[in-house]
Every structure is written in structure tokens, then in C-alpha cells.
Image (cartoon, rainbow, N blue to C red):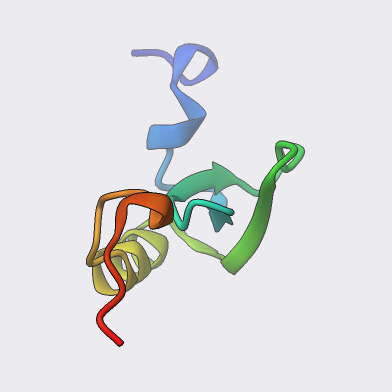
Length: 72
């Protein structure tokens, strides 16, 4: 695939943010793109691999926060 048709979400050469929303869901987001409404930066900017490691470490509960039971 040519560089001009490469999906920026798969590009290992650019920096990414890890975003989080009010439902405690995570997303990788290219640094060059505007942050979507309802999301905030949780980590980064860093290499894509570092952001993926962060998400794998932090996002243990895949259900949205509104569906998670309190353990307290």
C-alpha cells in the first residue's frame, strides 16, 4: 500500500494519544488530528506501540462505566 493511502491509525511512524471518554472507553488517536468532542487525552503523545501497551494495561474492564458494577 502506498504511503498516501496508508491508514493513519495503523501508521507506526507517527505519534498517538490515548483518549478516554466519559464511559471510560479508550481510543488511539493520531496526534495530528483534532480531539473529538467528548474525548480527552489520557496518555501521550507517544509511539503507537507505547499507546497500545498503555491501553492493554489500563483498560481491564471492556464494558462502559455505566454497565460496570461497583466493587465497593
